[in-house]
Image (cartoon, rainbow, N blue to C red; front, top):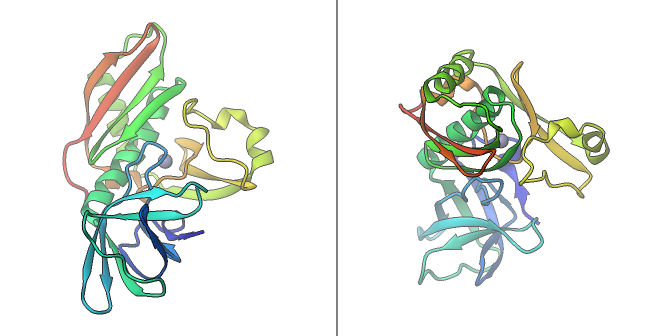
Length: 239
Ligand SMILES: [Zn+2]
């Protein structure tokens, strides 16, 4: 099992760690800041710096079969460091921040469009969600205006843990029907955007909605009789 430091602090850009295993699937560290692909968010990229100065490019991050071990996937031809090796693990922060901004914007989109979510994906400064919105007419400009009003509130984004039992007693917390929050470990992480949104999520988010930047709605596609895909893009860099 890998200690997932990104769950408590998504802003960590590098961390010292120890290689505990290396196999064909990827390198396992005792702890990591690399987010493994899941919940619609891609796996982190970055590099591992060995003590002898070697840099190992990490091209993706995934979960192992047990869903607890995190695998750092190396590029073709890279030699595995030995177990016990000390590394400095550094993520591609520019890429991650774009994903954190897009991911947080998608939470806000579920507040703008309060319909069941059937799927979604986080991209690099853009993203999409599919909604069972029925026959309601969706308007790009109207959605963008309401989304940007929520971003402008600069609301705080915080996390806390609840038990599986508490989640089961509050099924309304689960907006995403296609991606059930992981249960079975006894606890589930809730992500709250102050006064706007509360839902279980294991992804990485910015600390305040103001960091998202201005959003535009780039597309609304009909995916089914009552299902619509809404695409957003962030039109400027953060900060
Ligand atoms: Zn999230």
